[in-house]
Length: 295
Image (cartoon, rainbow, N blue to C red):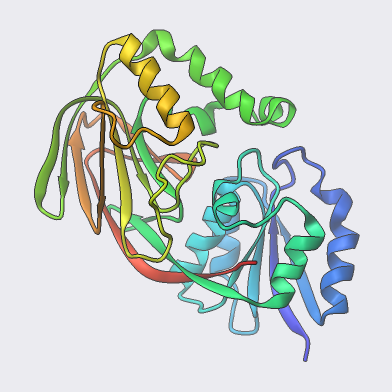
């Protein structure tokens, strides 16, 4: 029996070459009785809306692009309450979630993962009741890098483009005052540079940011970088690159089912690489709310 899947693709993701591989994808999946219905995104929100509009005749959704496209497709599935799996073909600059799930940047292998039909239930996060995320929420320094870096710059320089954009912001580095509550208890109050709330272990290409993270444990991993002198900041940053930062004195780390972030109400958040709501934030978990095709 033929299966039908919605293919959501971002034409400018990564190096922008996915359009050259359409025939290969159609051929591999069709040979295994999977027919895909393509949908091209133009603007932010297109992928989510397209997924929300599908009906019971579909057997799955395939997202081709970076973390933003994957996140939108996942959010669309959650909002539509369709119990069908999500396939990921990582074609973006970073692909944090795909990396965490060991989904390769190889079209044939990705198609085979979908054909094999092995599914993994994963948690989804929710911010302020209606902003869903599959990987990360953050606020503070560097959190706007993903959506402020031009697509053509990312296409040419890849992950390095994020580092360049981050270095541009260093002269304007200022601490933010935060109060963070986890499950009703105060766990941090003071000045910090950054707070990151993760579902997987990585964000922005830092693949060991939360090395203890598990996608289906009903918990989020929280990392707060305290304000500190520049020499200590450099030392802590090097530890972050190595994944050895969790016990650093300038890092606050914990796992939680829910948390509140209070602070400067003019400070925006970043939700899966896109600008999210301004503080305050209330963040929770929807355990095992989504199924993803995995190796």
